[in-house]
Image (cartoon, rainbow, N blue to C red; front, side):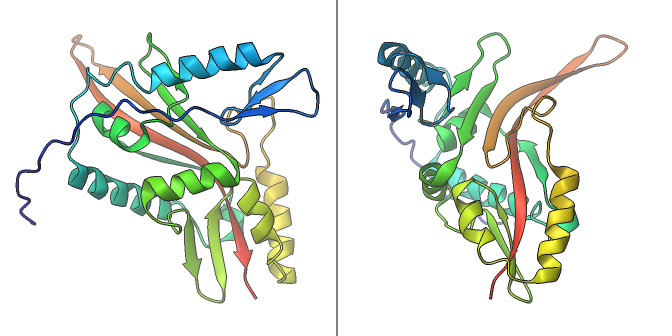
Length: 237
């Protein structure tokens, strides 16, 4: 086992990233760049962004700061488990879930400034990532551009769908057999909007505490991070 010297505690930062204000084609609507929620006026969107900033700052003094070197090791663990959920078979493409134990402070150390939902009652945090801009944010978070891609033999790769990267990869799927298999698989796994809260082309990161109670009334709990995403495979020529 590698011995780590006692790390110094990094200073806590209170800087946050304010979501971009995007005006839709309808001049009377404004959309949040992260959660895609649409507002009728700029004032409501600004109020929404103010609340989001509080989600990323108001608990900083309540959770211990995780050393940088331990956070880096935990990010490597996350990438490992994500890659384990990137299958080589077209039939196994679709919705995936990664779930591993994670402290609240460790979650903050990785996804601070990207938290877009917090419930005081349940203690649940949520982050949404969708589109090219958010994909670049994830590249920065994980310190790699291949965190969501797994390469296989015969010029094949499986990747996490984040809308924009899905379009670029789709253009490389020139293998007729692969395309036919992918089309059949997608027709089977395509989620119904009315029953699935996880959107295709979007990665949702959640943190929550799970509890278990036995017949004697003994209660135990553990904290987890959940990463929901969709995968797709491409054949590269």
